[in-house]
Length: 286
Image 1 (cartoon, helix red, strand yellow):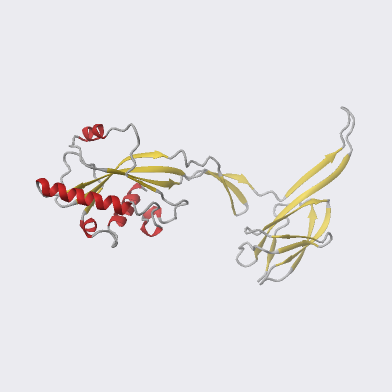
Image 2 (spheres, helix red, strand yellow; image 1 turned 90 degrees about the vertical axis):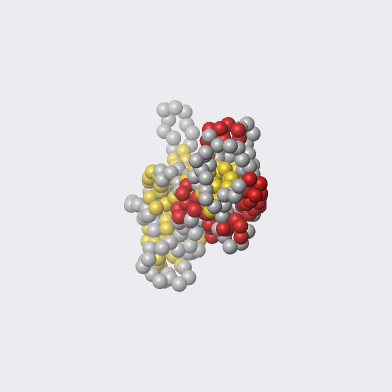
C-alpha cells in the first residue's frame, strides 16, 4: 500500500496543472543520504515515519450482514505516513541552490492545494477497492521535539531545506468473525412478581418477528416494500436492506400481505413463533 501512496504522490506532482519545472523534475523516494546524488533536478519524497493516528482510531467494530449471517469486522487502521520533501539540483554553487529553492517552493505550494487528495489521483490499492475515508494531508507541519540535525546526522548527509508532508490512509486488517444469523424471532414474557417459592403467573407472552423481502429472480433485497399483517391490520415498510419487523405479537397463525412496486403481490401464511430460520422471509416475483 505504501508504494501505491508513492505512486499517488508522483501522479500529483506530474499533473498537468503543476508548474512546468515541477513536472519536469525527477521524483525519487530513495533515502536522501550521502550517496544520493541525482543527475538531474529532483524532488525527493522520503517516507521516514509511519504511525497509527490514535485521534482517528475507531474502537467500534463494524457489523454487517453477509448472506444469512452477521459478521463482526475490526475497523481499518488510520495511519499517518510522513514524508520528508527535499529538492536537488545538478548545477554547481549558487545556481544549484537557487534551482533547489525554487523547486522546493513550487512543491510546497502545489501540495498545499490538496488538503484532501482527490480520488482521481489515487493509485493501486488506494483506488480499488476505494478507501473508506478521504485521505487528508498536512503540509509543512513538523512535530515539536524532533531534531532535524539528528535526522541528517543519522543519514550521514549535510542538512538542507526541507518540509514534511503527512497523509492519513486507511489500512484494512482483514479480521472478521461470524456473529451468527440475524434474529428473526424473540420472545418477551412478563410475569407477576411473587414471594420466593410461589409460582409467578404469566401476565403476557409476546413475540417480535423480523424478515427480509427479496427479488425471487435475483435475490436482491427490496426496499420500501409494504408488509401487512392482515389479521391485525398492522403495516411495516422495509428498510434499505429489505428488512421489516413487528413486535408485541401473540403466538398464533397470521398472514403477511406484501406489496412492492414492480412485483406481484403475495399473501404468505406464517406461524408465530417461527420454527425455522428465515421463517418470515418473502420472495416477490417481478
